[in-house]
Image (cartoon, rainbow, N blue to C red; front, side, top):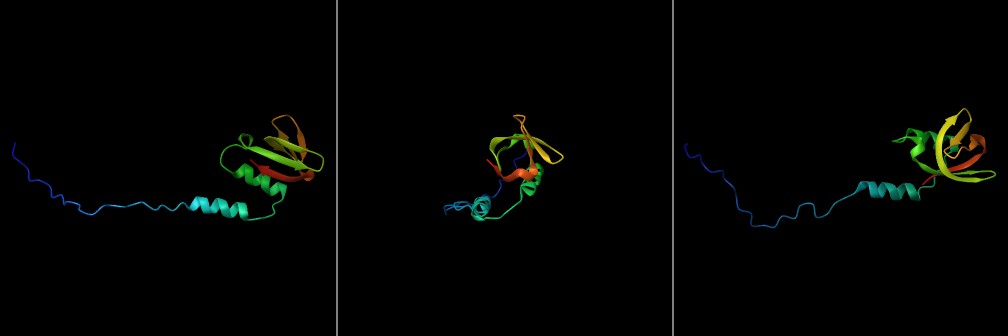
Amino acid sequence: MEKKPSIFKPSFTNKINNNRKVYYSFIEEEQNIKNETRTTTPSEKLKELMNKDGYIFNKNVIIKTNQNTYDTRIAGKINDKIVTIKGDSIDIKDIKEIIEK
């Protein structure tokens, strides 16, 4: 075999400090969302939960109604009611607030 020429490789005399300072945009977005006080209706919040990634029954929620507060998971929506994993049926018109944990 014949000897191939060596590849030029410069010597580095300076210290390389790449990526010492990193910017995480999602941290700022989370802080802005928490600070933001936007009012959404329970039906809008329910649609938002259903359209998010994953299934609706994988999300822990707190549902506040006129009579009770439910700490549960949502199994599904049938007509104008929400069915929980525990078997409770909640009218959407009675819901004051849906909070995702």
